Image (cartoon, rainbow, N blue to C red; front, side, top):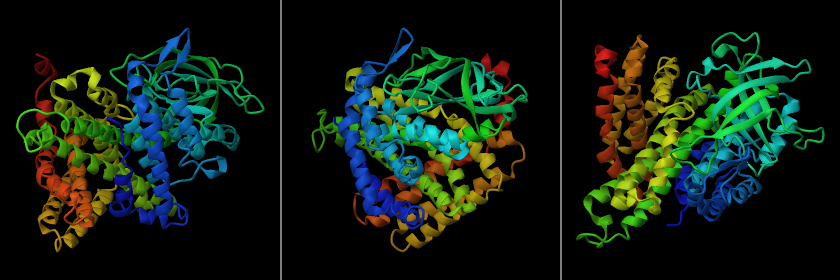
Length: 567
């Protein structure tokens, strides 16, 4: 079926659920009012539906390939990139000083979500550039900004990030890539990086790599790492891409999905690079890009979930089997359960994502430490729950298709294969959960408590109109508060880590109930209230079991030895 961008859903979310009016009410984003945002989302949706979505299947069937060291992209991807670039969709949040639109992250997040649902393999390319743009805006020298940012924002050049090495996965501090000063302000970067999304392409004049490497005096671990900008081609004085740098694509990874997106093994042999940020301050600079990407990856999960749900819904409403009111499987109770669960979770995950983006915007616009803390707290939840939802909804989509879901021609399996990696990259979802219960609770749980206060206050106010929905949300929030206090009280970090994943999911479940309740109040008696009833009655109760597990500690995990576990 044709993909349909969720423009209406985002318009409703921003207007009625996540408080976007607070963003447009700031001086920084005053021009990005409701009418402008509506026009932007409509135009972006048209590009997604008409240009990107038709590339989805072809990218899977005709993967990117390496021919004699040259990257050949999937058919139509060059034209797709051109449409994305010419529409200004790469530099949406980029500074107007260098050609960006200066739009709020909430708008960028909405567009990226829609692009992900249309064609995730291609959407990965502008997402990488967006992250690099933000990192350079915050950490690069003026000379680098003036040369690179206009090219990246316009889409003439593209960006990547190079963290992972064969021996150093999530433990970035174990990297061995090195950088030697050349004596002229540049550095010779040497090493090999793996899992580099869109490490090369054949439709941009240059590809700009942000590479983590260690200077000669860099101490072991993450504190000794620096960040370097290493372009595929060395720019000439006039700003054009010049001669080739000393780097190459060694090979492309053979992946479960995302076949249209080339994931490269990159080799740097004394390649010329420029320092970004301070010496030995590479992780601080790279985290700017990684946090941008974490929100973006959460949006990828939500976008694919949307597309998988649309695909399954269309099939269910056409597939005739057995006896039902409509004559189709869409009216069988279990299929209806799956379809409704899929839709309810897509809304919950999308609302969490948009709420996180709004918090980022408010932090940027006001400088408020409280808004920045909220954005930081919500980021791991948005990333993990967004991608978990993408995987679960895509898997359910295969189930809705029955035997046909296992047949590649239907396209149902591609959503699952493509989205599965999102729970792994930019920090696995387990790492996101550990970050939530450790670093994000170093404030003694203050950011979490303020968020829970807000949810409970809203539920109290909603009791007069929808007591049967407001009550369960309030009670779930109070249970979550008790579990949060338990987490903060644990001095042994493994006791927190053992229950981190169920804790994060429970927090997402409660946030989902909160946002569904807001939606219900905005649509009394309508479809959104009915969907909220389903979520709060059928899915929210999951939080109780999750929180029981979250507070179990690590004793049972470590009571069984590795020898016993492997026997």
